[in-house]
Amino acid sequence: MTAPASCRGGSNVAMKIPTHQFDAAVEAYERLGIPVLERTAACVTFEFGPMRLHLDRVTHLSQAEIWLEFIVADRNAAAGAVERAGFTRCDGVEALPAGFPGFWVTSPAAIVHLVSETE
Image (cartoon, rainbow, N blue to C red):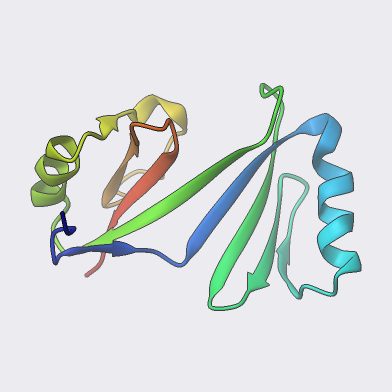
């Protein structure tokens, strides 16, 4: 089965990392020479080929998680498409900025995805 033409993988990948593993994870990527694009206390963003790899410090996790992104032309149409594909809406996992044109879903394998509408 193919994905709807209006849905494609995005350029953002997030590793949600427990606080007790965060510094070591960041240092490992830095030792490999992966270029740092941005750094805050809560997130270090690396240039990861054509992607942006966000290492996010998360206090309430016991192990790391990978979060991905879908880019869609119409978030309302995508909501139905991802549901029919077996994804479950999970907006409570992380707050999005007010007015952000997107929402969160989780795959049948429990991988969180941001569904983000392009203009």
